[in-house]
Image 1 (spheres, one colour):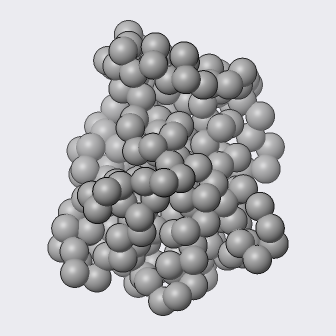
Image 2: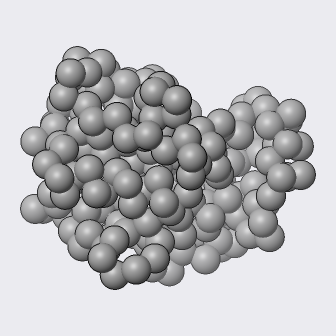
Length: 203
């Protein structure tokens, strides 16, 4: 990625705490993808897309993730309440951001089809003035999402269960910049054995 895409100060949160209940209890962070753990892939995507500091929120099998995944350039934080859902991981991640962080891009570990180009487009929308932005696929909102600092507290307050930033984005739908990424990324997540088989075959 060229330097013009770099956006120092815009942080990334990789939410990688899930236990993979529908995958037979295989922690999503450690699922092999293109020869390495999925969490490594996700961290590289946000960094190549132009994000600055990268924080990875761990939960299920967090000690194994720390041992097996190469995440030396990332800040790793634990979510002891990971079983309650993605919302708790978003809260932990937002609380871990450095003071003065202007915005954060939230990346889900189980969306391997998200590309650095999609990340770069969201950062470009932020540079153009968007304080809330989301990747869109044929006009439908998807992941990743970008949240400006003005909304951090509201995002944390609304992050319950598996909702993540859904409450925030719904409450401010008119303010969310939808950034079309369907030509450079795939929004599907990796949630079931069928998804795993397809992504492994494609990857």
